[in-house]
Amino acid sequence: MKPRRKQRTIARNAGLSGVALFSGAKADLRLLPAGPDTGIVFVRTDLPDKPRIPACAEFVGSTMRRTLLKRGPVEVGTVEHILAALSGAQVDNVIIEIDGDEVPNIDGSAVGFYTAVKEAGAVEHPAERPVLFVNDPITVQDGDIAMFALPNEHGMSVSYTLDYDSPLIETQSYAFNFTEEAFARDIAPARTFCLSTEVDELKRRGLGRGATYKNTLVVSEKGVIDNELRFPDEFVRHKVLDVLGDLCLLGADLYARVVAVKSGHTLNVKLARALREKLNAQAGKTWDESELLDVARIQKILPHRYPFLLVDRVLEMEEGKRAVGIKNVTINEEFFQGHFPGHPVMPGVLQIEAMAQLAGVLLLRKLEHSGQLAYLLSLDEVKLRRTVVPGDQLRLEAETVRVRNRIAEVSVRALVDGKIAAEARIKFMLVDAAK
Image (cartoon, rainbow, N blue to C red; front, side, top):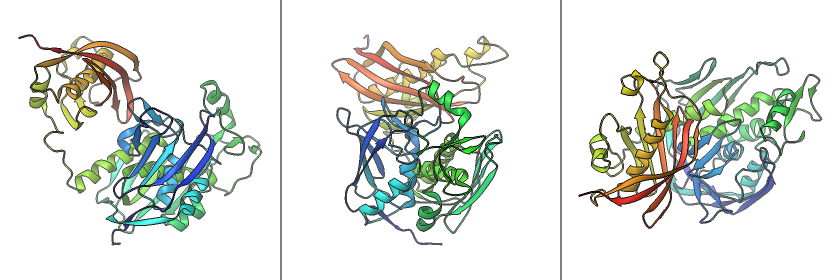
């Protein structure tokens, strides 16, 4: 088994500019050296206070045709290609300053990013890079779409089978054993693609405004439009590129044989999250007592009681800033007895209530013994995006936007299997509890 390598950062600043694939907006970004254990962090320089979003699986907000990071109201989209380049170059710690909400597309591949990183040079840190050794198979699946992480003591490999359900793109398979040289030669140049029949739908939804025939392979019945393939199997190689970019969200070197069948960003990220849970367990990571709250401790903060306490556990707590909790949805919930009998669905208002309760924990944790309560004042930007049914686990996330005098605003969302089920911005009034 190979010894762990040292963490690395870039030796000097690097810059890139281009047009974003989805929004069509021009974006400038700079890569800056960072210290050990920083990881990859995006910084929105165009926003007040320059908010930061770590490139970690926990902060993925959307996987609709791209990977989008989201922290509270702040977003950075289409991060997968630059993350693949950093992973391929084995650069672990870097600050990425960007003046927009989407990474520029360059030529639709990872080559431009990889070249910029290599030209910046590399510096080793004394600290070792975290490593995840997969000892038992891990599977994530959605119908006939599947990914597997299997033991592999020699490092990381990715085997991908592309079946695009279209006669325009033939079934392709590709096996990749990770080395930096192989990444630069065989994977980095592979460009993003779509079918010509998808173009109108993407435009109708306001997407693909920065796409051209030069930075996106558009496939029609007559072949690739106004372009030539760099590889006969460029489509499946780009899918491998996307897998590498999304698995970079693990934040560690991976010793595993990854097998993917028809997967996209949604399943890629789901696997990254499962692997990250294993990484935390392998490292013996536990939340300290101030971060991990069970029901008994939650009840010391909130006035809610069964059957209206809708947060089972708080997993993470950055006091006054951010909290993550869970709500396990079971068929024994009292509201299922009368809400769509025979087709039980968790009411959307209760999803919002669960998010509001986590926000209350976030706001009142610091004031646990102050006798204050957080009363809901208003709801904005409420969206219910998917049904929640018995057996689901709601991952609740809350992030403080601002607290001024006795008014607090919190951005909240609820996810099931990494997909957003509900989100909102909630204002609270902090009041003294009645004596």
